View 1 (tube, rainbow, N blue to C red):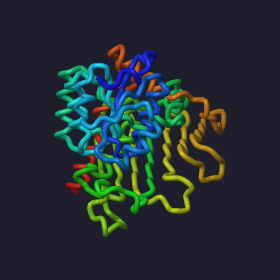
View 2 (view 1 turned 90 degrees about the vertical axis):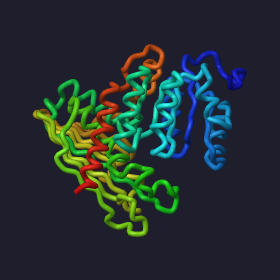
View 3 (view 1 turned 120 degrees about the vertical axis):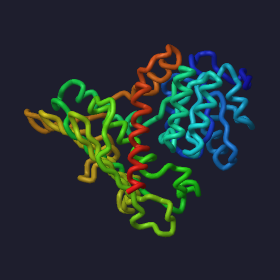
View 4 (view 1 turned 180 degrees about the vertical axis):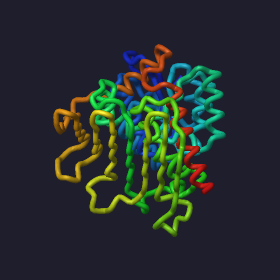
Length: 343
């Protein structure tokens, strides 16, 4: 057991982190802490990652072997933002040890990994949840989902998802530039937009009409794909996704992420992280319908994913995200990646 005297008896769910390689791990941990869960322990083999994490979460025990976490019966949930190609194996190990698993996107980096994860999830009945943070950690996306569900723009018929990112080449680890380790730009970044397309259209699946990946401007790192796009179709809607590493230095943020959701009776635009037109703050939501143009404040919108995931761990439900959508979004991104690279 991992130093139980340092744990509180208040939290209904105790969790641990394995793999701190991407900073998204901090957002994952914070989602669970705000939901009342308790961070009991963490593992990383790299001191440079362990030190700031331990300073931020001093009550969490650093262990020298991830098996101590896997074999501890008091830990119900494992979270991870390990190097992407290592995430599937961690999730499989966690599920086979009777634990639920929440992982940063991409949850897997190949279709073979996805098949293995699906098989083990089906066998163990554990939760395998990919934290698609551009949905679950973004108040405007949550609010847009509420508005769409309420019929504010009628039936959704088109979706445009833009995911530009800042490259910051000098601060990236070596694995970031490896196609094998990241899975490629569509597998990685565009899995966000694939999940949002399914969520906002209510579709169970989507056909991939076209997909592209390229290295347009980074010849020194030839395995880096700095541009990608996907065209999707369902019987009722179409979607266009563009992701890239071309955020200019002049933008005061890491990326101008946007969604445009077109319905039969109006549309919604999300300027998720900033408004280049000049309005301050984040989570800008603009609704245009028959009565006019409405800018909706999302500051008070609650983020339900963390509390719902904790509830799913305790009650064996699927309220945070249906397991089928979790896997299908990842499959669409992986198949689009394969199609783009075969072209």
